[in-house]
Length: 80
Image (cartoon, rainbow, N blue to C red; front, side):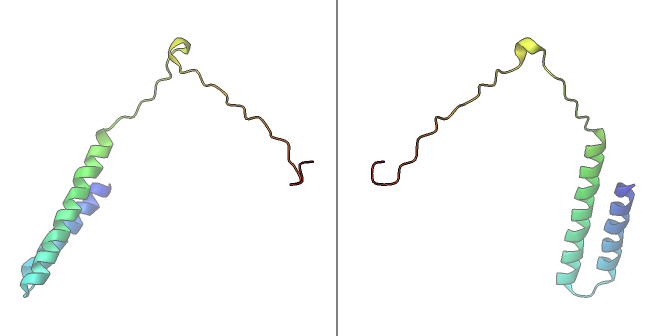
């Protein structure tokens, strides 16, 4: 399951951040962990989203109108 892998990646980022000496690296790793957790949230949301398409009854379907273009005769430039 993708959510589990994303959570593991977030935890790993936080673990590495805890062991990192520089503040900049720590901040970057925390931001990466937050990104992984957003992916967890999105993956869970995707699991609960049901997309159902229902065809409307014939009386409610929009009428498509065909457009016809008239073909103009070509001229040779000399009027013929």
